[in-house]
Length: 292
Image (cartoon, rainbow, N blue to C red; front, side, top):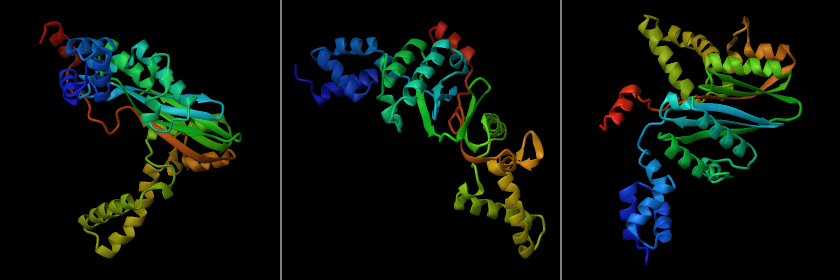
């Protein structure tokens, strides 16, 4: 039977599955719509696709290291309850280790990587169908270090925050201290030079308006702005922040005192920048039990 565009469209609307999945299902089932729907359901595709509009802003972040290579990843679920599920954690380990051993640099490439379930995308679809929540690989970053550099990796709150740092020289302990600093103090950048010009301009304008509103003349306000920008750097730049174990020195000073140099930092906080669910999970479960 000819698989027409109209037939594919009808199956897509009926199941919410992707166009290519619908075309494949129809091909496998000789164009029979009912059989194609069941084929998609058996594959977990139709069931997971219906969850695409749901918010998955919980989940876990983790770090995987192999020699001079590391990857930090975030995988999302809809509820914190599922993020504690052992099967969910095993899925994250599979994803992380698969990406670590690959040349993938984008989400599209990562989702296409082969694993025991077929591809990472297939694995996520299968687990979505089994666990019953929308799951997704949100992001990852691969980091490579030199032989004279050290990874600092730190997981906070069981995986709600993950930080991966690279320190040239020094040692593993210093690198981990810097990662812990980042987890606790939430820097947005590593160095002053990393702060975008438009961000600085906006902050300068805010500080100038504040000074003027405090009754300072415009010329005095201008002078006050630069002092406040230095304070701003100490809040948002890892290297300039007071070191949490010794507030008398900066993080950069702590590292240099130990013969090191900060090279990079990646900090993931699960769900940051995403819309959060605000519904009552217990109520949702009861609604499902009662058939609502």
